[in-house]
Length: 532
Image 1: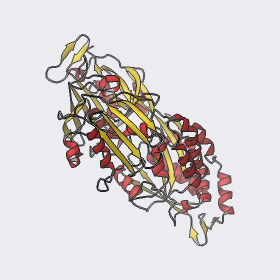
Image 2: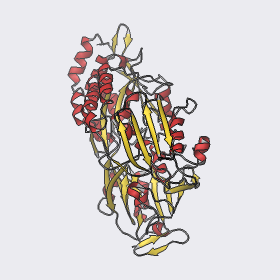
Image 3: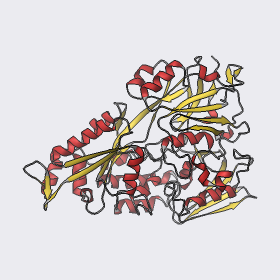
Image 4: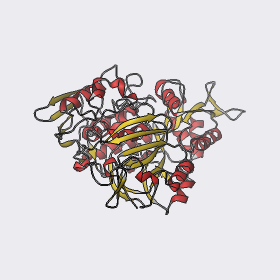
């Protein structure tokens, strides 16, 4: 299950096959304009209904994919993770503060101005206890921060209570809310109130969402405008959660673009343009709260060594991926942390069994291990909405049963899964969770500090080496701190606090348009509908 889909510009051009299709020229006023479709409709897909559209509270990838059309991020990152001008034109960074200069003339979808005071109010809302925003700890390290707006100078300064070397980059995960949305955040559930190039005009949950172009928009990445030839008048996002259905709709011309994986990818490859990128990787995380088997590092390491991660990765990704080696997965990655994988316990079933024997976990007549009269029992919980999750879970379960573990598997839909993992203690391991973080600093609240309701450390991890290295890394702004972040991540892997499982490659196919990819959707300001 993916938790967070930060949308950052991966400015890699895709020139899609210029084929005639009805979607490119639909709608009143549509027509041809120098090889482009004028005032057409671009139709793409969302893999699931986005649910609440509140940027302050959603961590669902489908919601963030939709919101990328209606909102601007506070900071835009290029394909290498470097900040580029967007609604913010320049920045001044220290280990514990960042001062942003906002572009003049930016307006909200209701016509109101987007000023430093608006941004300051947005950010301050995150630390309101009544808000209970999950972005706290992702966008900002915690509630101990202050903001100062200077509308005359056009600047807003954010000062954190403790250093955060990647604060500037973290702000790329924050969508700026403005206008009526700032005044009444409760109204954001089914509408949009942002400064982005499109505005939501129709929401039919479970079926489709329609957004309409804002012709005045002229402050996209690098100063990109939306009033250019070929820019769609409408964006329609259809809910399609089946690869075969999406592939059929692409082939028939009903869609301009969609993510398609698995066997259906093979039949589309070569017939239309394909862009491949890495999606967030899956992790296995053990519950370390008192009374759970995962509280014992020997048990965690043995359970990790019992796994054939290569086999599991092949199943989870339809052989369209690789074995996981990082806690991150959403490109662009600021830090190359691949060296951290050296800390992961290697697959060795015999060594795992020997370690449990030595620790006093002995097999009984029924083949199940016990120690001090307590059986080695695991409740493994996973989201049934994730592709191939059930097949992957069978491999986890088989490996652990062979080791002598009594495994109980619980399958939940994505909403129930998130609630159970983050708000309950009724699980021992989540073998296939996808946190989809882009920066190592965004993972800190998941792997240290308090759990719910005061924090996000859902597994109760307390790794002193990790915490010590993080404390050093946050003092070092930008890429110079990457070595420390890599060592911190290695410390998590060495104690099997977190175990990377699989990294999936995702394919986005399209037709009848040209565009660039941002995250896992077309960059809104780059879409150009072709006439033929």
